[in-house]
Image 1 (spheres, rainbow, N blue to C red):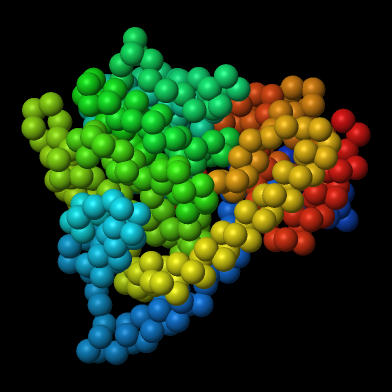
Image 2 (spheres, rainbow, N blue to C red):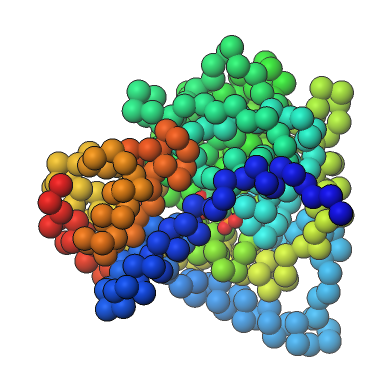
Length: 394
Ligand code: PLP
């Protein structure tokens, strides 16, 4: 056999595995320590009642001969869910056709799988720091990666450098890990640049539901010209706590074509229907309920709860004189670590405060010197963590 040698080029261990390893070691040595996990971006609030009752109903349907469903014939999501997503966008003032929405088991799968439709020697332009899966999936694929620098100077929101060209551009807004959100004017620069250079933007909107500032965009399709250069990848994981249920969707506009006129929507559908057999009916009914008036109101209560947690963490850091970013339109708090070494600070926070954060270096070299804390914990644990942070000696 011969292996895909690009897998051997991956850094030895995925960020969260390395964190888990260090936490487990500490836990073995200190079995009584009460460890507060503000590291991984997983949610903790349960599914909302509207989702539960829709899923219960769907389970019962699956148990009746007349209502049982097998394969989703289209393989790209049931019409009822695609219609609900389309309406969600219409309410934001964005027109997205139901047939441009392809339902999946989450954003991570789509972000990795979409590379199937691009040339092997594609050049990817990826922000640094950012969600590590963009880099790892491109490394696995053997693509060339060009990094664009996020820094204090640009507020961790890089804008196009006309001297650089790429095939695929990754934008993540609200950003994981920094919590920064692009303005419409900044996204317009990206859309214009992509249209001029023939690149495609992969817009990761996984955290769109956390945007509370109405002037900020929550979809790339709010930007003029995006339909000819952008794909939006989104998820119900953070909007509705579907991290364990698994549902997301990708929007590929009908106008998006390669230089030789081939439709990316057609290719993506072909890819999905060949390698994926769709999301379970029960899950899709739960997802549909997320977008109902009651479902959205209930999900927004959970988001407000998490944003309340973010404020508690942010206030604790401010009290220590530590400036931070994020937390207002994002569940992530991003701050400069005392001493500048993020893995060293991660270790100190774990040992001295029993708090698990995520070292910024895990999100790219520009993340060194920073730490990410998440607001996805329980209120009780967040308050405990804030109290422990306040006792920090520096
Ligand atoms: N995109 C970003 C920026 C994320 O942070 C995450 C998960 O944390 C994902 C995508 C993955 O989402 P999903 O659970 O839908 O696979």
